[in-house]
Image (tube, rainbow, N blue to C red; front, side, top):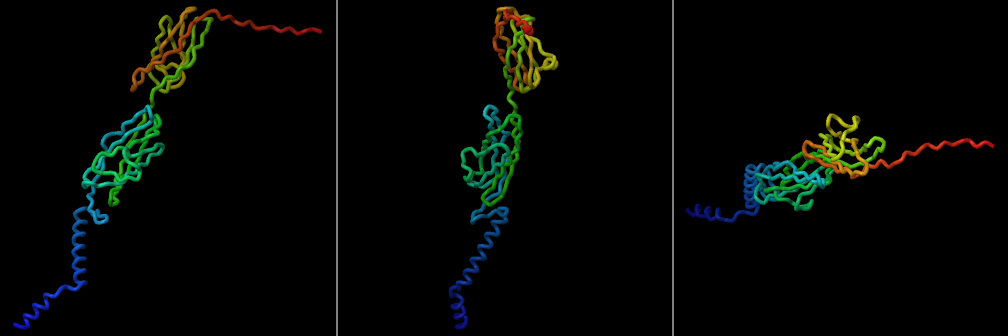
Length: 258
């Protein structure tokens, strides 16, 4: 019995430091292994991070008047408080995350708004948005931003022809569309070279006003119908027709005999 008692006493001695450290190391390995298995291997600085995803909230909202666009996407499935870095690459334009500096870590659990600037009319952009979460997982979106062309009519000059009671007027358009001419007191027609089956062309258009009366002022209005923007009006510069202009006769020079 004495021997048995001594064995009991011996077994109650404290563990050596090496044995204790080994046991703790084994426990850490077990805990970390379980965490890696449960969290898709996402581990950084001892903090467990849940892998999520990003998705588009809505197509980009463009503002043609100032060449900007706003694009919103959101993160889902990330752990509460998860943050990451957002990188935006846009060829031919600039971009920034609204409300954050370029170096800020951005919460990934809500909506993220991107502001694009320097966009040109009639150009389609394909920026690449990359999100890197706390553990280096990368997520990407490639939205399409289409900047429409703002329909414009630019006024030219009115040239009067006193020999046949007419005046011609030129204007330019950056789009083609149905053409309407309003000229109270006169008739507005078009040049066969720049008028295409009742449509203004994208480029230079020439209008002829006829039936003009001497001493009468006219203020015609040109209207071109755009398929998206609707009716675009252009006020022709007011002009007063006059027949008072005199033709200049050619001067005949005679040689001087000496």
